[in-house]
Image (cartoon, rainbow, N blue to C red; front, side, top):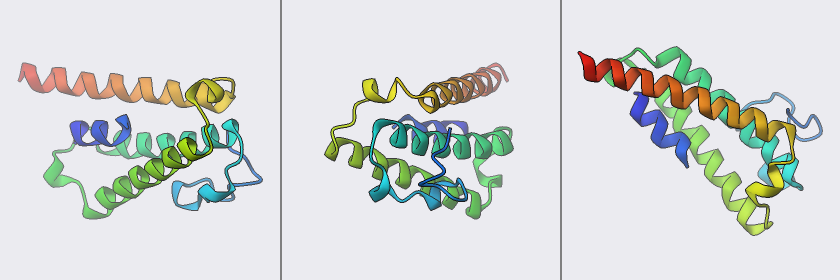
Length: 125
């Protein structure tokens, strides 16, 4: 599971755009500036981390189809966001100025550390 989630993810929340603050609620067409995009990515990574937290110790076969589909949907949303960034010429450097970008980087680092710990544990068994 850890490797699958890492593959999916390696690719503050704007109240004016996001109501329920879930990846499925993000309307990519309404993302205007770098911080809107950073907010959207934060939502996606936060949801992906929640899935990872809840499933990190499970074997892939033990993870429900519902959870797998949820992770795939988040991945699709992240791809949609990244494509829109290219079209609107939003760079990572632009997003770097936003608070939510820094939060996203923190979450990504936490996830990476969690996955590395699981992989080390599996290799030592």
